[in-house]
Structure formats: structure tokens, C-alpha cells
Length: 492
Picture 1 (tube, helix red, strand yellow):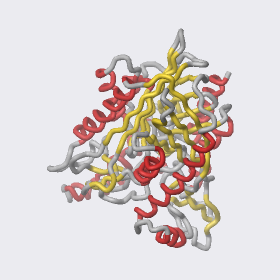
Picture 2 (spheres, helix red, strand yellow; picture 1 turned 180 degrees about the vertical axis):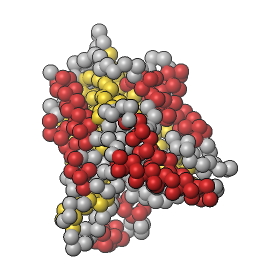
Picture 3 (cartoon, rainbow, N blue to C red; picture 1 turned 60 degrees about the vertical axis):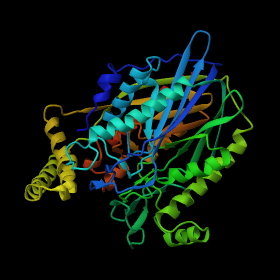
Picture 4 (tube, one colour; picture 1 turned 90 degrees about the horizontal axis):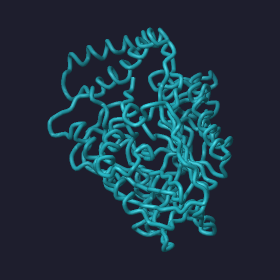
């Protein structure tokens, strides 16, 4: 079972954060960008095997937007942080918050929303059971390096807030994320299946092509930052052995050309646990289009094409948003801990996993060297965790998973977090039941295990099997209800 250390540190009790509601408050905004690219080889996170980085394709960054609303009798704040990482493990968030608290005691670390863009070519942090080797940065070193950089950026953004800030927002559309779970006529689903099969039936989930954008400017009417919210992880180049921020690198390049090099571009991944930036059919036509546009071949061209589409959507959103800058609006930030029902491991699932553990342990005993990283992962982190969960169920048959959610109201906008790779249908349900005019979902604001729908679990396959999930689909339903309830309470 995944560790949940930071709850003891940051959330000592299961209580709703009683954030003061400010209406018609003066906004302050601070921003920062920091390079978090390791300067030595590191283990990479995101695939079955443990890859070792061999150089850098495109650097990793963390981007920060700190907002504070000030009235005569109250203040309220939120600090958005987005990092080019796979997810935000507890060990990293703990380290960031500890460093921020030491550097500036005026910062309420409960107000920090730290999320990942989900690139598969960023450093691993919390895989202590896997082997490490000479010449590599070890896990504590990686955590210290990245957390120090992010904490420094948060403190800088907070301490350099500018008064009389304004924001503007709009939504446009671009086809970036595509369903990656194909369903066949026998009812079985496959992630990255083959829709060309004769028994292909349909794609399992809806696709959300919204590109939500919030722009921020200071008291001098200078645009200083933007949030770009997209329902798609940044994993075009997911199998490479070079560090890579993936398509967000080109998105930032394009938007800097349009809005200025000093504008902070903070990317957020909306609910997209069953979505991918990879085309599932007519791939050759996309390759042809990238070539005719003069983009580089392969995955680089795919990233450039995605960035082109996002840039067009953000530019279109700007045309609308620029007509309606706002400052004195309702502002509220609340957080709470949800206790979600975990997915129950059946005896059959445990027995199958135990057989795999025994097999992989035998392979490890016969091959105790660095080439066994994938075997170690399969044995301990994947199948071993299934066995451990089953054993824990014998004394706790109805286990609950504690997870934080944040809800922010900014005028007519809502921003809601979860820690999961949340399947798209859950995100759409929150959006359709939210009282806000526009609702942004921010997934991967924590350790990112998949949270599938009942339909996906019935279909099976990776991302919806027991080893992929800690929380049950019923837990996903509860997460949706509690998020919507918080939104409705704020909008009262």
C-alpha cells in the first residue's frame, strides 16, 4: 500500500479547512519558474522497467502562481504549482512543504496545490525497493534537489506578490487527448488495443477537448502568467531514456513567443486517466500532416503538432478573455480529507499475484544485478502490493483511503483537485454538476494511481485491474459527490 506520510504532517484531523470567504477582495499575484532538471543520471519513472536517464531532450520546469485576496477583515490564498513530473509522491510534497515552512513562516503550506503534468521521462522519487547503482543520484538526493528548487520558487512567488492584480479567463477547444481503451465485442477492454481488429466495438470513454485558460496581469496591466488546463497527460515520448518535459516544452515556447518570455505558463492536467496524446487510428495521416507542416519526424513532430493546436486554442481564448478582466470577485479556497472505499482484493487475485511474486523472486535470486530492475518492480511494487493489500484486509475488511481535495472559487471559475489518474467520466460528472460557469479539474495533485469507472473495471485490462487501482469505482463516485458538495457550499 502506498505510504500516506504527509497527512500526519499537514492534515492532523479530518476537518474541512475553514477558509474565509472574501467577496470583492483585492487580488495580489506572484509568479516564478524554476528549472528542476537533474544534473546527473537519474532513474526515470513511468513505465514497467526502471530506465536510467541518458542526457536531456527538453528540460523540466516547475511553474508557480501565488494568489492572495485581501479584504479589511480577512485574507485568503492559493499557491498553484505545476511540475514536469510523473506524479507528486508524498515524500516530495512533504519535503517541499517542510522547506517552505522553514523559509517563510507566513506561508500556509495547506494552501499549496502541487500537481504534475505526467511526463514519463522525469525522475523517480519513491521507489526505494528498487536497486540503485554507482554513478546515479540516489532517491534522497533527487528528492532534496527537486524539492529545494520548487520550495525556493514558491517562496519567491509569494514574497514578490504584486498588488492590484486582475484575471481573465475563457475556454476553447483542441483535440489533444484521445481515448486509449478499446472495447471488443466480448466486452473486454484493452488499453492501447487495436481498433483495426474485426471484433473491435467502440472506445470506452468520452474525450474532453476543452482548453481552459486563466490569464493574470499585475497592476501595470502587464500579463504575468497563465494557467492552461488540458485533459491529456504529457506522455508523447513516454518510452525514451532521456529527460523530457514532453509537449509542454513546445507549448511554453509557442506561448512565450506570443505573450513574452517572462510570462509564467502553468500547465494542468485535467481528468484524463483513460486518455492519451497518441492517435488510435489514422496515424499515417497525422504523420503526413506533421511532415507537410515542416515539423521534425517522430515524437518530436507529434509534440510540435500538439503545441500548435494548444497555442491556437489559447490565442482564441485570449481574444475573449481580454474583453473581461476582473479583480473584485468572490474568492475562496477550501480543502478537506476524503475517506474513499478502497478496491477489495479477491482471493483469486491474491493467489495469482502471489504466484507472480514467487516467480519473480526466483528470477531475482538468480540474477542479482542491475538488469533486474524490471523484475524487482514487478515483484514488489506491482504483485507484492496486491498480496500485502489482501493480507491487510483480513484484519480490516473495509479499508479506506485518505486523500485530500482542494476546491478554489475565483469569481465564476472553480478549480478542483484530486491525486489520481482520474478517468474522464468522473471529471465530466463534476463539470456537469458544478455551479460554476467554468470548472477546471486538476488531477495528479498527489500520488497518481488510476481511478477507473465501473464500466472500465468490468472491461478489465491495465489501468482498470486490481494492481492499477487502490480506490474502487464506488470511491470515485464518492470523490465526485464530495467535490460537487464543496462547490455548492461555496456557491451558496
